[in-house]
Image 1 (cartoon, rainbow, N blue to C red):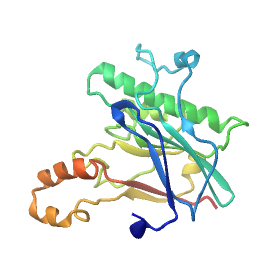
Image 2 (image 1 turned 90 degrees about the horizontal axis):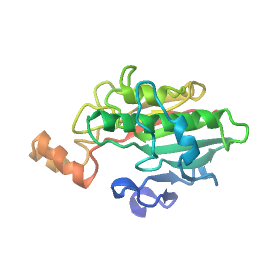
Image 3 (image 1 turned 60 degrees about the vertical axis):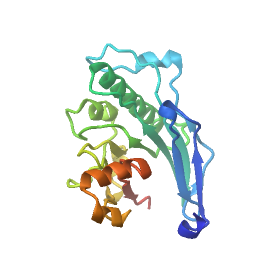
Length: 228
């Protein structure tokens, strides 16, 4: 791998969570410095009662996969990332409510930390697979995530992150003070760039089914932030 990406990249990752999944960061040490604030986000039992939403009677019992907090420094700027993969389940109300409560828990954590004078950094970015069908007001998962002030940049209207649907599952969420520093953002459409011979030979449906198990069923999302 080093011959393809260079020797300056390093990984950091969690142990397995729900669905035997890990969360990870893969970063360029020549550009950013890894900082000591790291760990999985867990809501202590006594605080779980504060994870609640209007119209949802269901109790929050913790994350299916604890979001993974990583901290980095670029120049003189520190920032914290909250890497999340929310519970999906299905379209049943109990599953949707559980996912919404997880989304609100992420937003609440970020909101509490940005105003905490003892927080490691006020620059907090929540990112990952939030399983948001539509990143717009009225979607219950988006409304829960943004309830405490997180917002998302406008991404490509033509390409969604999921290769199988037009769902906008993946997002990078900022508070307005940091969102103003976004220079550019989008979704990388790798469909015809990876396994190009299969792209030419297979139907679109078969190609996406192949990618699902050999690469990912999600396209990478990227955001360019100017901290200066």
